[in-house]
Length: 517
Image (cartoon, rainbow, N blue to C red; front, side, top):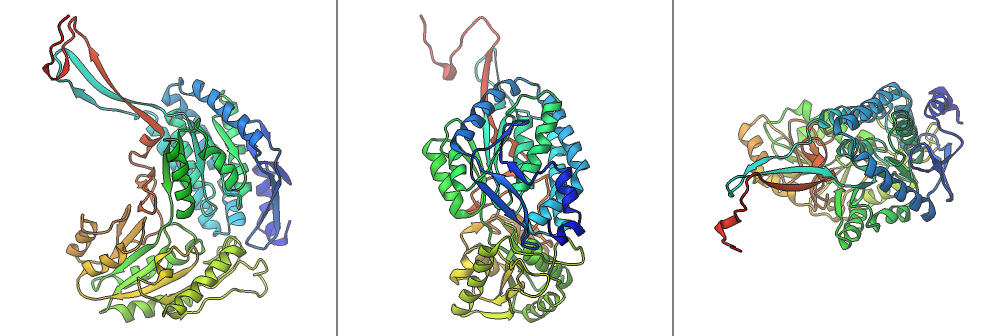
């Protein structure tokens, strides 16, 4: 254990979360086992080894899926409010362990401690939502064209839900899916990121204990660990009717093809290339706050991070200067220290991609306004700390068209009407989050209209990053089209059934058809 880890109480957090030096990365609940290779988890904060997790083998997976299938058949018969009550008790444990779990998220992933706590709070919030939802899994009633008949629709549990999550939100994305799936009556198998395996084991420890204490069947909350090959065990498995996958567009296309090939269902949350439009009527102070946090929060590793700043020529220089000045005030360092604004990237591969992006934008004709670079002095020994950078660029640049998962902000100019800005914003293959900064009602309404933003999230006078539990989270185009969390996102975890009841002694046929026997 490193000195930084000890100073910030990581050793105590690991103990509270039930983590060992070597942990089994496969679980059906209280039963933990693994026969695979060892995955070592190193912190991007200081490069130190945090712990080890054993990966899942095909034999391990087979035990998981058969246990989950069996558990589902029992779990689905439990009334939904009772399932909600167990989720409520799980939520109580999350509240109790919010601090140690938030610390682990920060230390293993590299986001700030406040962001780590915020991510656990998202888990708590979605559980609150799910508990209420457990009494609202409602369908519709409809009038029948047949006399003496009644029609309605209902939703039934789908089965075993496979969840594949990414390193950048190592706990929240799992909970968005699993809290809803649980109250819907599904069993869940989760493959977390192999880059953050300890947070996955920690969450499973909590869920397993709560489910066991409340008499839920073994297999409702399952964990598998490993690289993409472990994920493939689920995507190719016909016993898993729904795969919810969060990650890169490349990964999502592979998952979509595999699942579609067996006519399964996919919920995809993929890349973002998010833009803020700044009009002449924008509040500059709010614009700077929204743009800077959106670009550098989580070291630019949010799917909703701000990648592009599209500014009207009238206010371009003013906005550019203000944002550049704000970047000069950023403090980069240990994310557990709440005095710092920006922590590290997840690993050295991410650093390489960051460096390549900065090289590429210059090659294509861009101009660097705030220099990037890798920090190498004392406190940056992990080699994962980089300087947030800003570059003037054109929207058509190849590097701008792709999602750069790092703190690189591309700023560009637009002229004339807001429709010109919308052409730029929508002119990428991703469609997750978007924002406009304006006090002009017409511009705001245009942005939100059918002719406006083509993204799943469209904000006015707030940034692109951050989503609330109450709304459905997700995007269009190469973002994948999936929706998680709030609104009616719960329906994807269920199967819809239409019912017709004849309460007469006659059997009239639809459309007035006669069929006399």
